[in-house]
Length: 370
Image (cartoon, rainbow, N blue to C red):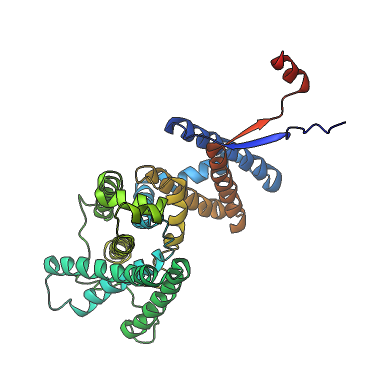
């Protein structure tokens, strides 16, 4: 008697592309579920009222005007570097060098502010800083792209290596420019004259940074979706062989795209030094170059949706730090809550891309055959 092959109990199949409102509906459900799990974890492990904890997370960003502006500034900086890495990721060039490219731009900005402060008035120095920061970031993007295009080197390791080179360069020049000598830090650059500082807009210190990043968001959306370069990036990302077949010069696209990616990271470095911190440290980037990978991936490389993902990650990070202080909890607990929320959000991508179906009962199968 022949053995009858049984259908698997669970069958996973790839979905066709869902409408945007359905995919974001799934993400919203995942977020709500994650908050429920966070509430249960909070109740059973700390005894705190979950609503009080969630209220503290909200207050960390919106309890005062200053906190709201800081939130918007942090969103803008994360979004800026996320926009920078999107073209490379879309091309399947895994640029993990956002940190180094930002530091290169920040170092170039600092050099201009310190070395040229007596040679240029502020109105002339800022354009010089912009050009130098963009060029430094572009150079940091060009080097791994050139080696990838010419000799097929591993871009992931190469861009990570460039991060460490940038960190060591910044460390070296911090000692060269330290103020006062022996302090091991630069301090506030041009504090008395504010030479090289980006000017406030409408009395707001961070508004110019936010406006610049908003313009970059629109530019990147148009560039990726409607330009010839954006089309070539998509084709190269889908298949290098197809790109060569239709006449696209793959090596040229790789180098051009990474130069753009590095240039935008360099500009972000300028915004951090000249527009926000007015100093240079090895940690000025705050890990944004790596967080940008998550932002770009969650938003499916769409610059507009990246605004939402940037907001979510910055909002959670600020709230997590605040509740650990307000409730006297270990910082690890706040990280646990953030991890739970991100786990659910990232896990929701599975249900957006795949469908789960279960084996029909034998009775139902017989009925269908009849």
